[in-house]
Length: 161
Image (cartoon, rainbow, N blue to C red; front, side, top):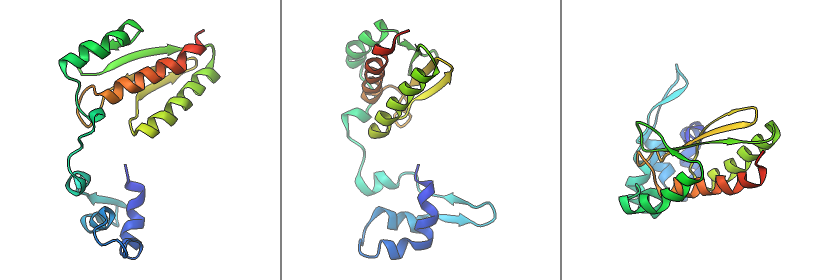
């Protein structure tokens, strides 16, 4: 996720962050080790954020409860989404008039997904976009998936073939 920053942090971290005594990137720069042969960082504490800022408590970051599933999944399932067999995820195939509309849909969703810091699993061939949504951090469906699915349905609605 932040691997592109790591070489900069290792090379200039102390100088860049000298005015910020407990900045998380300062801690990260001390916890990384760079392997010159492979050109990759070989050890990073994956829980740096949670140790620095505490556990994520956002309502969008928790698994859906059984009551929430009944309430929020029902409208999505009736609008073409389906449960993925073997995992806690939802799936839908969007069909557009042509490749340009499919690509435009993907661009709009990508911008929204970036704002939400929640990215879909998707696949595009010509006028079709296949989407699977699940929250990897909680290993299942969360409110973020529901919010992104509703956004996708709204964006795709005007472009029905």
